[in-house]
Length: 428
Ligand code: CMC
Image (cartoon, rainbow, N blue to C red; front, side, top):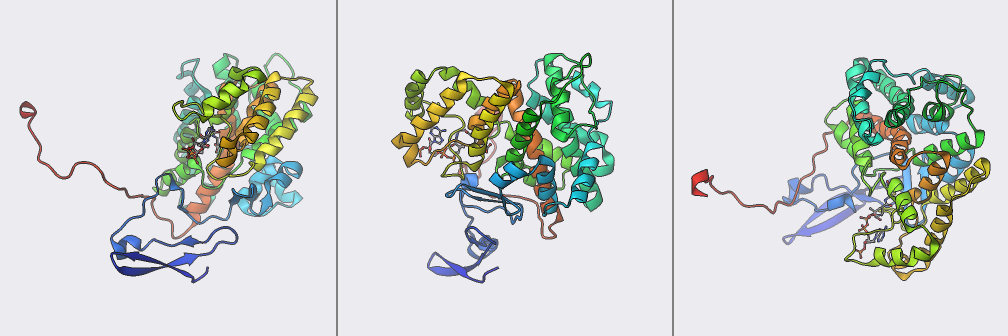
């Protein structure tokens, strides 16, 4: 930590605040004593200039388009690693040895089943329920089924809860899908990989043998890697904030799922594909670009722009490549991919997008791949939630393990009425 300081002049007085230095990235000004010394708060709606915590998990340089997990570039992890290995890395800080990875994979594999009574829980949802609605409910309900891993002060219970969440998420997501299409649930098959098992539970039916297509399994695994963690985004901050009060991990992850659902966050992959399908053919692209630029039109190019990336999202690069691999493996093509490529090309040449540094993000191409694999759009955000669970639990664990952790409690700039007397209803 550096002992550089920042000076702030308020009402003619100068106050000194220490600045803290991370291993890489901008220094931060430590203003924890600001209110005590100046009687002022900072004002930063949307946290555009606020570091909410210290973290050693993920680093993003948005100007350069860099994303590192525990120091490893996302492109290298997507190319050479597996989702299980990246999960181990995020949870434990280092890449595993072969033995460590085998042990970890075995542990996760043997926790994939959910309590059988939870099957009945699903029946309470309308049969056309959105999978994300089911996920919010079912994941929160895990806390009612696994009481032996909700004592957050016990590191062993935290570890078990983390493993349970990571392991059961594919089962829960696949069951949400099965329920929504009226097909019977499939139990996990421990002989398959994490990703292969998820594909089988989603697309398999009891009457037939399901064959996992290796190229699809690899693409899906890579999609999980690309979504595994992303620093202090809205849903991760939600998980941290929920966890800071001491809430149990299942409830916290359920809160994260709810936040992820929004179209400005995880819901953008569903919105992006719907938008591409609505555009339909490349000749209609200019009309939609004009709409996106029109301040009086709420329409935005979904899958474009990012709070942190002011350059190409490195995950979008891998996604675009993966589309081609999946199309080749499944011998399919979808005109929507051509529309996406042309939309990207035209937007990146347009002054509006250039000046505002709006580039494709992870969600721009993911929907095209997921749709080719066979997922309905309503499942896209559920898949994002499945993959992000490891990031959420790793961030939650990091926070709870910190001895200086306190409840998250922002303040505000109050603009409501000042104190006034209650008026009885007959006098109003
Ligand atoms: N299309 C058209 N204009 C846009 C877009 C877009 N997709 N994104 C931002 N802008 C404009 C925006 O109108 C604003 O213009 P002005 O300065 O004239 O008011 C400027 O760019 C800055 O936008 P902002 O909304 O202030 O930026 P933000 O950091 O608050 O929002 C964002 C980031 C991701 C919410 C936004 O870019 C957006 O809504 N994108 C579409 C939704 C999307 O793809 N979300 C997925 C994000 S990546 C995956 C994830 O994290 O979940």
